[in-house]
Length: 169
Image 1: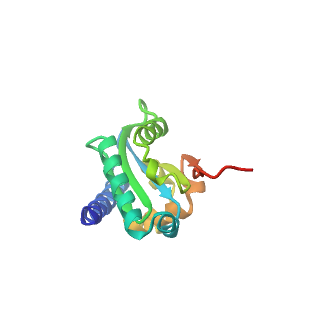
Image 2 (image 1 turned 45 degrees about the vertical axis):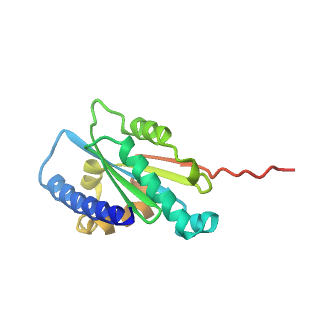
């Protein structure tokens, strides 16, 4: 399963590079949403479950997200970060509502021990806003730039705090 995650990640990055190039060259009525789901940092899950069980939890979530999203959507994982490309028609679909609905329906209870941060970017619009130096980044570099600057570029950001089972006294 980890090999499949790596292959999906590479296919995702290749597709994202292609979408960036196509978006720079052509205008289209189809928008591409880029969704980032952050599950804390690499150490939080490892400390909560142990390295092997944490990896299994992440792989299981990857599979759950792939089943929940449409065939035309792409899901990839990079460590504890999930990236999803979601094509949509900006005139008729509300990407934020769609992502919330899918995430809610594919809730993975094993990962409730860390904060979940979700950011939704309108990729085609975003690429028009970014300066030329950012657009020339590789897909992986662009993802890191967006992750770091999500408060600036994301159309929607929502957080789900970690669930704790301890009882306050």
